[in-house]
Length: 488
Figure (cartoon, helix red, strand yellow):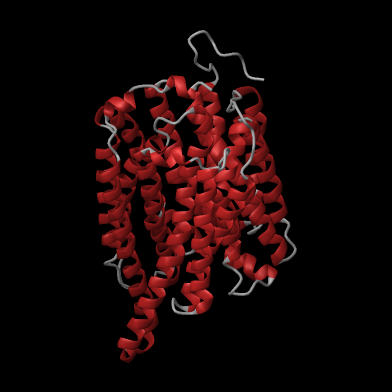
């Protein structure tokens, strides 16, 4: 058990607790990118077809994104520390299972289990940061650390995944989670203080089922569009299913006494705007990692490890400017930071939309990565803060889950939608330039990427419009503590 809080109301172990939470967050973020490097080797080793290899990633993201809302509510009720520890233990077990997978079904199942326990772990971790740090300046610093890990961990995962795959085995890309999770689990026992919501501890199972079916259908519909086209019945039937079940979900949430997503969480304009903007940023940002990774390896001929190192400037930029952002936010407020950051992110994507098969890393990619990382670091921390603005202790977990859900669903939808855009653009380019001969495939593929980058920039611009319209809290609101509501 952690030591009792001292008389000033502050947890004496709060910074140690942040270190433990940071370890867990790094593990979850790394897992999102580290496995991407291992896919070709896992596919060959387990005999996974090209049509099924997407499930190595999708099984995780769908389970993670669609169950986060329920995970946040469970964390509120059973205790955030308890949920955090259960999530760590389950994530370690699922990772070990994936690392020893004997066939594709076992691997897909393990990845889905990782998503299930990640959906309990992630909102519990963010909620613990929110309730542990009650002084505004300290909370800003804590979110700065959290944001730096969230922003930079994906690029670090590419390097680690390349190293493990190249020098050991793809299985270690999953197995590496086990010692990390166990370390965090042991340290959580003495350093993290328990907190939970009071009141009725009922669970909204109908809401969880309908939102899960709705979100899975929506993501799968976009995936189908990428392979079968928009006009096929096999595509739009999933959009119809998604619309029906999501409509039922919102109806249930407005009527039930214990909803997993209380409408009051979305009704506050700053929180609702932050969630929508986060979804759009996730959709836009995913294009950079997805298509630039393919470009570096398939067009420029980089090895997986070299490709991972090529993302280091992005990682370092996010880490460095996340600290700057945490200092500036109490002085100027979240909206100016977010608008500036989204503008810079869009500029970076537009720069990437100018690449060709003969572009160079130093002249055409590095400047875009630096601009994007600087800008998006100004978005990550304010979006987490505004997403939890004025939230009561009872809803802290579900509000935290919405921050993560927005990112995951945005990334999933962005991947499916923009992949369709890229494939369609590449196909049109090939038909219009059939005289190019052997160079056609590379130019058509890169053209598809550049069109997708432009659409990604549009998503970031839309996010900026959302922020401009919805976010109205200033520096005074950031400075003032919500100590009463966060003390639960």
